Every structure is written in structure tokens, then in C-alpha cells.
Image (cartoon, rainbow, N blue to C red; front, side, top):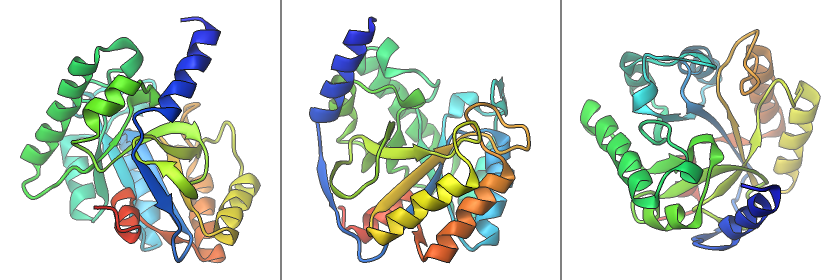
Amino acid sequence: MTMLNRVVHRGLNTQLARRDLIVRPDRAMVTFSFDDIPQTAATIGAALLQDAGFRGTFYVAMGLLGTETALGACATLEDVRRLHLAGHEIGCHTHDHVHAEETPPQVYERDARRNSAALESAFPGLQVRNFSYASGSVRVAHKRRLQARYRSMRGVQMGMLRGVVDRNQLPVHKLYAATADTESIDRLIAHNCETWGWLVLYTHDISDTPSPYGCTPALLRAAIGSCVRHGADVLTIDAALDRLSVV
């Protein structure tokens, strides 16, 4: 696909197949989300949030559990169980981490539903309500097919959640050690609190030597501290949608 085609698709993906949501919270909100999920996210990342009394949203691809990827070892089913029992939100990725750009809409939907069913079967009582596009790859037809199943779908396009946003493609900011530092993240969280918005941060592995898609424990700890210092409510995706009275 040419660069021009990518730009056109990106614009169409943003403008079409929307479910608009008005984001005007009574207090600033921040969500920490983790994709895929590496074992370091399920252990180090979760522990850092829990130490502050917070919980995160972990988008699990069941087909990756127990495997090795460029992000390091992925979490095991037992890691996911511990996250669920600790009160973190278990969200849905595609089961085999398939990408919308490379997968027909009906096949993509089947893979996502397979993942949700596998998670809910593994953990009786779990309701998988929110989805994240694998690698942020989004297509209009895929949005349309998934919107009836999930309360929200999170992308990777940059942006704050304030005013009118599309809950079929929630925007985010990266929490990557390769592109952010403690000062820039603190400014971002401070701005979100000053404007009473909802900031969704996302990352992958948590390590002193992270992949290009992960962050260090120190950076995650600093981001959590910024939320406390600036007075943000740290909520999971599902809890933030509750706050916004999304059915």
C-alpha cells in the first residue's frame, strides 16, 4: 500500500463507522493500558499500579500466551488469572494478533470473538467488554463488524479524549521509553488534568531495557506519581466508560 493510500485510509477510518461519545468528565481521568500482553506488563506493570491503589486494562491475545515475541516472554494463563483476581480489567485483542490491514473483516471478527470466548471460558464470571486493535491496524469494515460486540475499541492514533470522540477508535498517547521521558509525560498528565479530559496511555513490556514498544519501571512509576500529584482519577477503560454513563 502506498503512503497516499495509507493517509486516505487513515482519514476514512477516523471519520466513518463512528459511535460518538461526549467526554466531559467531572474529574480528569487517566487509564493505563497494556497490549498483547508481555509477562513483564502482567507482573511489574500490574504491581506498580497496585502499589498506588490503581488498576489497569490489559488487552490479551490468547494465542500469544506462553510464547516468546520481540517483546520478550508473553504472560501465561495464570498471569492473566492473577490480574483478573486483583481487579484489573481484561480486555480483548485478536486471538492470533491478526491485523485488520491483512485480514478480511469476517475473519477478523471471528478471531476477535474467539478470543473473547476463550477468555470468558477460562475465567467464569469475566465479561470482556472492551477491545484493542492489534498493532493499531483499523479498517472501516472491521469497526462496523465489531461495534455490536464491544463497548469500546481502542486504537493507537494520538489524541486526548475530550469533547466528541469515537468509541469505535479511542485515541491514546504512547508510554514508550523510546519516545517519552518523565518530564513530557508529567506535562501531558498535567494538561489533561487542567482541561478535565480523559487520557489513555498505552505500552507493552515493562523492563529496564524495554523493547521500542515498552517502557521502564521508572517511567511507569513516574507517570503514576504524576497522576497522584495532579489529582487525576486512574481508572480502567471500563470504569471510565461507567463514569461517562456509557451503556
